[in-house]
Length: 297
Image (cartoon, rainbow, N blue to C red; front, side, top):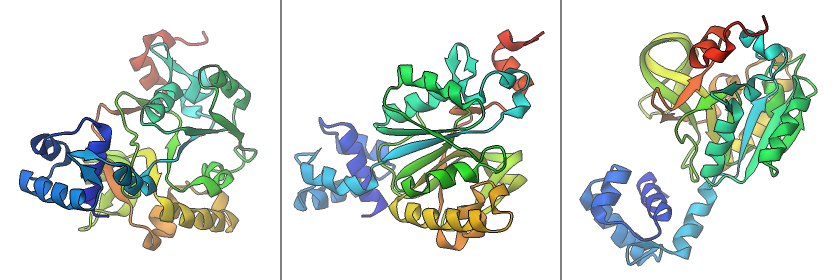
């Protein structure tokens, strides 16, 4: 399936009452002529009828449906001390709402039914999530004190197809998950300069460079999506990296973006500055929620 056909079917799936060619052009970025030609082809193939997606059209989208979201929540959150001395970072409330709730709510709003949370530090605290989200699955990472976040991905390496992998300490303000995704991608914010994690893309629009601090790049966000084929490869490559000398110390993103990057074509899903907030330090937390000023004193 081409990206244009995919985008058109996704737009029609989101609005089952049917959309005009003009609205479809606006939502997909295609021209009105391109939309008309595609609608004609899709109608002839039985994927669209009278401007509405058919059961056959829904079937065509099924390989692109997001199956699950995995939230990595095993870390110490040491830069948010003293708050994280007694509260796991993803469970910290900002303005009364737990950080991880903003992620889970966004995933569920996109129709993602399987939600997995990998716990470690203060792991027993995550049981409280079951009160609001009884269907989520909690997993304990027994290696969180001795390995990097690759250990959490390793734990669920057989569940990476059609899956979002997310850091669980991101504060989400707008919808960042999609019900259907065309290809593997990492979320990023275009920026003139950053001293944080970044990536750059090549002429094909796929990630070719990863590092810390750069100009004219994308600021990397800790949310990525892996399609069916890449999920299969990740299963093998994460396991291979984990077994290497020093592999347990790797940040998991190095597997597809550095160590085995020739095996992947990872695109960028652009976000805006106000879509996601990364709270990296105690001072940043206090700036967002002044109730933490002087915490523990």
